[in-house]
Amino acid sequence: MTKRSQDGGIDGHGDFRQGAISIRPAFQAKRWTGNAVGRPEIDKFRGATQGDYDHGVFLTTSRFSRDAKLASYRKGAISVLLLDGPAIAEMFVERGLGVRRLPLYVYDPNQSSSIWAMSSPSYCGVAQTCVLCMSVNRSTCGA
Image (cartoon, rainbow, N blue to C red; front, side, top):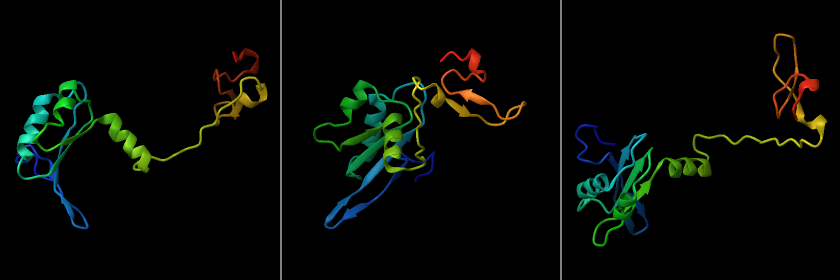
């Protein structure tokens, strides 16, 4: 990781080695919420990495514009892998990083006894709750 104010357009870099192969990647991360990352940001990052690194990775919590996607691979220049918010989330889920898998229970609405589940204790004790309409009264249940 590099210092925020003196990163020169690069937030971090590394050295990947496997056997005789060595790749020196650099990465840039943008924590954006509304706007898409555009081509100018990709071009600036590529300019900062050109000549010093073999590969670039650009991450954002937002998304990339069409022009940014087209600019990520340019003939004669290093390639820049683009990872947006959904792609990052998908990688975390696939690899089990920072997430926990929980079972999902599906109830058959055609079997009335299976849609009633025990809820946590409430002011009147333990109540049964319909998992479809959240009613605590079987006579007013809309399911």
